[in-house]
Every structure is written in C-alpha cells, then in structure tokens.
Image 1 (cartoon, rainbow, N blue to C red):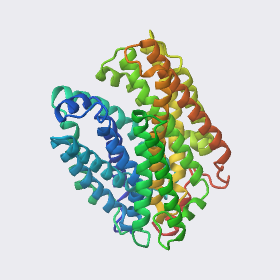
Image 2 (image 1 turned 45 degrees about the vertical axis):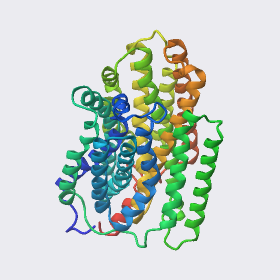
Image 3 (image 1 turned 120 degrees about the vertical axis):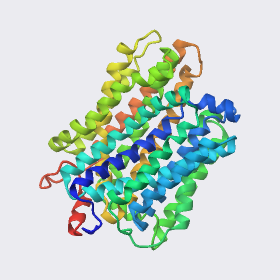
Image 4 (image 1 turned 60 degrees about the vertical axis):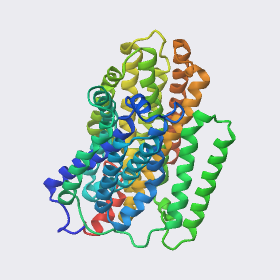
Length: 486
C-alpha cells in the first residue's frame, strides 16, 4: 500500500466503522426477514414448504461464492470488490423488495447473497491492510469488527418487526439501499486503494467447481429437514457436492494460477483457526435459533419482545469482544483464550438445556444465555485473528474468504443437524409445550457438544506463538506488511 493510497491515521478508524457496517449488514440480512416471512408468503404465494428459501437463497449464494470473492479481492483489489459487492447488494435488495412473484423474490435474495460474498472477504482484507502492521490496533480492530455481527443479528430482529408492523415488508429489503449508497460514497475516501496484490488470472474451472460444490452441500443441508435426512435426494446432492469439491482440489493441485493455492494451508495455524471458526458457527447459530423459538413458542413471547430479550446477550458479546477478549489475548495468548471461550460456550449450552416448559426468562434464559455469550466473545476474536493473519498479505482476501466460508458452512451444517435432533426429540409437535421444550433442550445439548469438541480439537491443533513474539494476537501477515513498506 503506498502512502499516497493509504488513509491517514485518524481516518483509519472511520474506515473501520465502514468495514464494521459491512459485517453488520451481511449478518442483518440473514435475520431481518424472519418476522416478515408470513406477510411475504401471503403476498407472493409461497407454499409452506418453499417459504424457507427466502432465507436459503441468500445462504446458498453467500456460502458458495465466498472463496471466489476472496480470490477476486486479491486479484483486482479489495476496495474495488468491496464497492462492487455493495452495488450487487443494492441491486438485489431492490429486486427483492419490488418482487411480485416467488421467482423474482428468490432471484433478489440470491443477488443479495452474491453481494455479501464479495463484501465480506474484501472487508476483512481491508481491515488487515489498515491495521495489520500494528498488532495491538489489529486486535482492537478485529474486536470491533467481530462485535458488529451480533449487533447485526439483533438489529435484524428489531428492524424486521418494526418495519413489517408499521411500514410494509418490502422495506426489510429497501432499508439496504440508502446504506449501500452511503458505503459506495464513503469507500473511495476512506479505504486504501491500489490494484490487487496477487498475480494471475481468475481460475474459472476452480470457481465453478468450488462454488457448485459448496452450494450443493449447503443446499442439501438446508433442505434436509424438509425432505428428510434419510431421503435419497439428500445424499445424492451431498455426494455430488463432495465430488465437486474433490474435483476442485484436483484442479487446484494441477493449475499454475489456482483459485485457492493449496500451499496456503502450510501457514501455521491457518487450518486449526478455520476449524475453530467452523465449529464455533456450528454451535452458536443453532443456539441463537432455538433460543428464539423457545422464547416465542414456549414462553409465548411475540417477535419484538423476543428480540428485546436477546439484547443483554448481544450487549455482553459486544463488550466481551471489544474490552475483554483483547486483554485476555494479550495476557494468555490466542490459543488459551479460544479454548477457554469454547469451553464456556459449551457450559452455557449445557445450562440452557435445562429449560422448562413452564419456565421463565429470568431463570431459564438470561443467566445461561449470558454465559454462552461470554464464551462466544472470547472464542471468536482470537480464532478469527489467527485465521486472517496467518496468511501472506497477497493472500489476505483468500484467507478472508476461507474463514468466512468456514463459519458460514459450519453455521448451516450445525443448524441443520440440530434441527434434525430437535425434531426427533419432539420439537416438531407445535403446541405441545413439554415436547417442544424437550426438542429444544436436545438441540442445546447437541450444540454444546459441538463447542466441547471444538475446544478439544483447538487445544490439540492450534500452536502457541513463540515467546519472542510479544503480540496480543497472531500477526504473521503483518510482518510481511512491514517488510513490504505498507
């Protein structure tokens, strides 16, 4: 990054605010539609079976294209891809809001997912370009970035309820448009410019096989609760997805300019940190999903009070990521904090599994959810920082795409698996409060086991940084930034 293209020190934090806004929006778009779904179903004619695809179309496009988004960021420049992603997200939001039938609505949602897949890895790359050479500032920046995710999830619940109730459902999509315009106007002034830092061309075959493979796996996972895990269709699509990913790995090993150079996984801790993010997503998202259902279907909360009930948990996550996690990393190191966070998260899940059909928010939900939130805030920042900073600077976009993919795929797999577990334990018996509670309790136990396994695997595979590197988080990539004069 040249001095000419780099923002001044005072403007870097404004740039971070824009990057955090991007993370906020990407996550908010997964939650804001929840309350609006019944209205969308009535107006556009969705069947009960197909209604979930208003959510799934976004997830499939987002999860399937993240690797490509990361590679394009490296090739053409993170700021260009960041801006391009906002343009696509804006267009998708306009299409989804103006849709008059099922097909157009799903097209708009898929376009939103494409935009998010371009924005997310580019945003993390820009963050590393801005703060990678200052280890302490990098940890603080990653903390603020990470805190934007739970804020976006909660804001989506609130905004979705308010907009649907007092305006109209298309505005859950239209609300993205002014924010996208603001981001497009601010990016040139705030973000570091320059062309891509990697050489080569776009690996079209690799892009097609990886996107199709990831998309097929996510498609199979999110559709499995509807058609059944024992259905031939589920396993056929999963097998096709795995075969495509196998072909992708073969292509990457043989091409001179691959989409994902397999050598990137030689970087110490990259694989272990991505495993931590995958299992963290696989534990956290099911907990958040089923906690919402418990509040609404068992305790009888409506959508807006249910969102309000999650505010203490969200506030603690944000404070934990911004204040507690950086200090803990500085004192104990990223490995110890990641393992401790996953263990605390598992303990919170175990506590939540004790929910009762005649329970209360203050006894059954609040204390356990706060414990789980503390664990999430401790585990997320050090594993994310390790995954991003382990790669070389010219592969920062790819590393960002990989870690985003790990978390999103883990979330989809975890949610689908816990949905199956909950249904088998009684959660499909709507109106039967004891059966519902048993199902939700089983899902919390399953998610807690995922977090517990994650703690064990991270303890076994994540390397402790050398003592002579007195940094609060792994920043091997930052050393390359310094040597390059950035």
